[in-house]
Length: 123
Image (cartoon, rainbow, N blue to C red):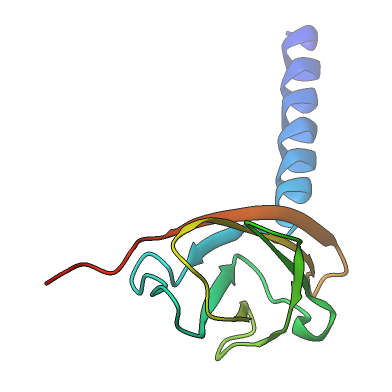
C-alpha cells in the first residue's frame, strides 16, 4: 500500500510538471490561410493565432521561399493572442514563415508555418 501511495504521488507530480511546461509556451493554434487563402501577386496579410497572449512588438518573422529570405513586418491583431504578418505580392509556390514570438508570460517560441499560393484559376 505504501508503495502504491508513493507511485500515485510521483504520477501527480509528473502530471503537474508537464501541465506547467505545456502552458508555458505559445503554440500556434490557427492561421487565417485556412479561411482566406493568399492570392498570387497580391499584397496581403496572414493572422497567426496562438494559445496565449503574445507581445506582438517583439515578434520576428522571416519569409522563406524562392530567393533570399525576407524579414516581414508583424503587428498586433484584434486579440492579444494574434499576430498579423504583412506579406508582399508573392508568385505561386511554397512558402514558410519562420517566426519567433514572446508570450505574455515571458517564454519565447520559435517555429515555422508553411503555406502555398496556388496559381490563379482560369474561371
